[in-house]
Picture 1 (cartoon, helix red, strand yellow):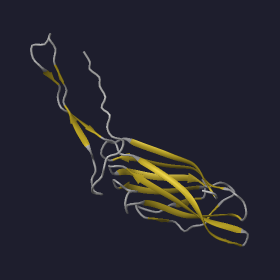
Picture 2 (cartoon, helix red, strand yellow; picture 1 turned 180 degrees about the vertical axis):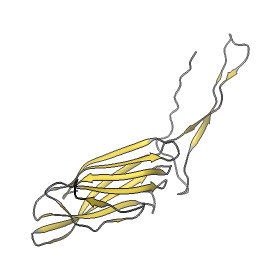
Picture 3 (spheres, one colour; picture 1 turned 60 degrees about the vertical axis):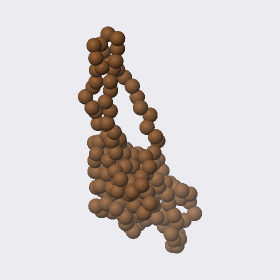
Picture 4 (cartoon, helix red, strand yellow; picture 1 turned 90 degrees about the vertical axis):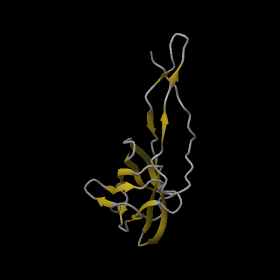
Length: 183
């Protein structure tokens, strides 16, 4: 026969050291019955706990002049208790918005780059260390965009971050629908 069960874990794992990562727990199940001559046990099973991946985004106005307003777009990424690999962020720049350079990143293999043929900003981060976004370990990408002055505009559309948990191999994908001048 089969035996099913679930175990409720706490919502968030307490991290005492920023280098704490790759959490797992071991389970061994035993069954007893009047119909069995002795207690039956399963083979031990190690359960790996998936990480998490979150992204937030906002815009700050940095200058006005010549009929244009320039904004810095900020992407802030946080990871859970495992390293994430193959991390990448991409977003669409609307037709009424111009990419204006100024790209930088606090972590990763590169910085956000504009691909004009598809009007997308792409940031190939690579590896995001465990516990990024907590304490001083923020993973932040920035770049500037320019719009006609005085308009409340959508500056960035369909931001998506993807990555793979290096410990459990789980895939992650998170989205932000838009970043606006009022974000």
